[in-house]
Length: 304
Image (cartoon, rainbow, N blue to C red; front, side, top):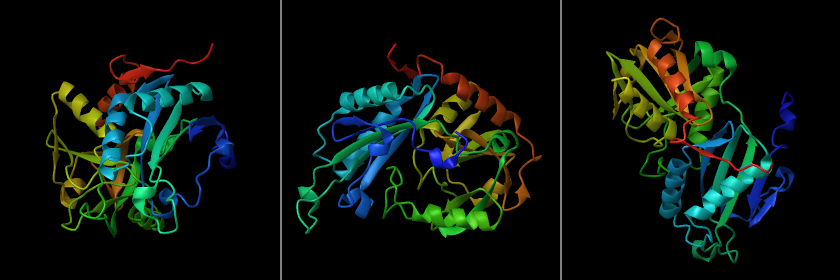
């Protein structure tokens, strides 16, 4: 897909009990998911015709639905899994990004009583795209520490994936203005949290650390911690200061849409030797090898 304007034309969607072409997927402007960002979602990766860690994604999605009190969805966990399978199968895509969304729905009157809403479920499958460039995957990306503060977890629970991400949007424009690609945000105490759609790791003195608070519990982050254990690397969730990050020997980002992404510089300062670190390289290879494992992946039943 070379023309950006073609993005979103290929794939398959599901909404209101029907499987639809992507061109027919739409959300009513009266839906509170649109008006209030009252929704939650999860994003899954299909690699070579297999869902990676589907159960983990569904666990997180179900917990988000419970926390958001979406109590009028007609679909249970097995129903979610069936829809994900069918949508991917109908798309015919062997490598895809899949999004599953629950919204509050449309209220029964203009009073917008949340209790009157019929919750809505949507799923869509699009050709796989990486959030990083080929060059960034090999030599690393450039990030900044944003001046924009992460929205406090007391206000918006960061463990629930949602589209209310204006703090991330603002931080990204900071990054663009400073000739970087991505931005990591700090909390009110000045500790490192996360960026838009990714967790962050720093390696120092053989210890791998990722922030423990104010972040999404990423599935890729979880996978990296498990893989680090296989390499006898101490991997922990802990507080991380800006100095911890800048003095790390290796730094990388983790996300479903990018995998493990090395960081080359922070605020213009080169990390380590300025090259792809050996731990990052080993973890990256192990991570992608897992996508073909029967333990970690679920095959999709495509039509003959």
